[in-house]
Amino acid sequence: MTKLENFSKGIIKENPVLVLVLGTCPTLATSTNVMSALGMGAAATVVLLCSNIVISALRKVIPDKVRIPCFIVLIAGFVTMVQMLVKAFAPALDQALGIYLPLIVVNCIILGRAEMFAQKNSVIDSAIDGLGMGAGFTLTLVMMGTIREVFGSGSWLGYPIPVLSDNNISILTMAPGGFFVFGLLIALVNKLSENKPKKHTGCAGCPSAGLCKMKKEVSADD
Image (cartoon, rainbow, N blue to C red; front, side, top):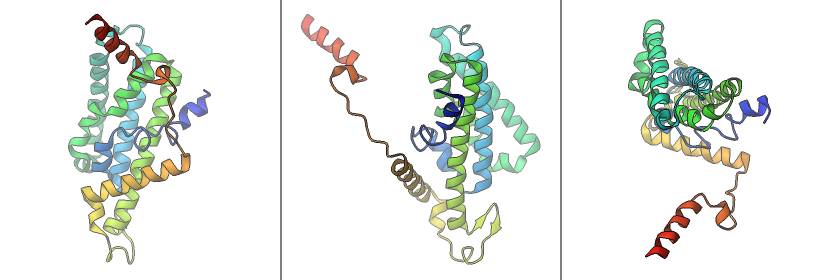
């Protein structure tokens, strides 16, 4: 995989929200408007980039048995730093994101990339992966935020839009509207990428093959 492919995969092919369906909680909660969507995307990208770099650099030092607790501690440290910076320099954004800013610690995207990519690849590749996944996450949030703010509030970045400001669909700013827009974007990505489920032939292609084998061995012993 080239550096460009490594970066671009997080935007469409392996988009963390629309393809891998990770981080849906902050996606739905912070995409009610473009400003909060941008803020959450930027914060998550910074944490993702920093955690990927450090975890990749320490991958040969961190014991395998305690890797998950170590990953969480490192991620929590970066989230704390980002939260302090946001509180100091962008208090309005901090108030808009609320509890979802510190909850980046348990964002499945960040821990998932640490476990699946950063601990197995070089620092440069892990940094590129973090940037790509962060870009895909931010792009999705901004797309959802734009749709929900424009049609739900009749504004964009807080600026009123003629006609739409007086004829908005307020349900789009609520949870049901978030799920509706989310579902539409997933359907659109699936249509564009034409991803079809892979057919497994035999036990070799099944992820539960090992479990089935264990069950057969237990049954034979009985």
